[in-house]
Image (cartoon, rainbow, N blue to C red; front, side, top):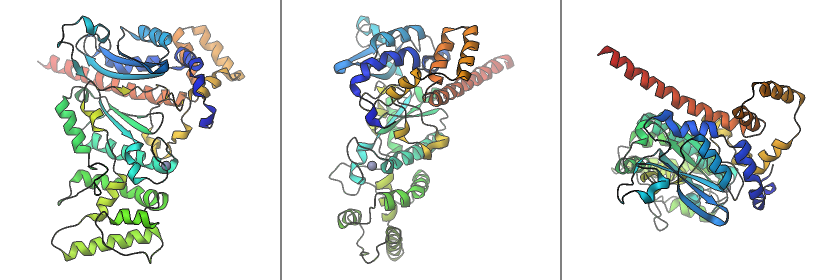
Length: 415
Ligand SMILES: [Zn+2]
């Protein structure tokens, strides 16, 4: 279904259906409840809703899954954001003595937005994306996910498509949720390489020895660079973009070579010559690759404990696309234009059922349960595989938690 088939003015009609029959409340609640890790963990979580006409309501909070469901079905938010777990219930923050209402915990989050790459992509600009520049998001996920798992030891990273032009990451490990503002800043700084604003021409500066993290990141970039930057963005083709690349430090003339891959080889060998002839090492080729492809983080989103981030399974009001989890096992095949829109999945609900589905339905009706009804509804739509993925993510969290609890009780037995 092309995006043009989604009409933003239909949103008020579609949202009630979405929240009544499709939104995956059960795994969503299980996720944010974290097995009831501490008293009121879910109850003290801030949600914020963007309603019709951009009315923004902060400090929403709910006692349990049923209250969350009822409120969402009543308010039908255009957009849902998730904030921190506070010291008190966010919806009662006005009744708490000032200063004592504090953000205590939140997932460590990352926000990567395609607009931050505008100086290095030629295919689109601003809010537009295409399959060519989407590779930048694939590279970002590969680099950051590896670092979060291998360098920091986190295991529960949920990657989510933002619904329009970027991706979010929710690191949900208990240790990540407890990080202080200072520790979050340190992680975000460690992961940031591309620095400086518009006026800075050279945004990546490497020094010897190259940090192992940068070496690992370069290996990822190298896998995509030729296809993405040389073929897709054609960074070594026209004079303007060549000037831009060469302005990054290289004084080389290679206009006689027309093939972009060969031009790049030439450029690399020039860097190599320079490196062997001078005492001062140069990493100009690596710096170019990183400047063009390295993930650009919105550091402020990661730093703050109380910073809000768009919730998974929220709708993007402009595109109608659902913020769905991304399956890293099929990352290279992920296509943002294939992500279902709210109009598509609502329409799928109305499609006549096959006899198989009807038989299944009768069986489940015999078991009868309100919950079953909801499961069956999204299962009939393109949302099903994303809910399944989310469900297995939540199961992974629950398994770890059970493992931790077992360890603790075994320790208690020993002593
Ligand atoms: Zn593009």
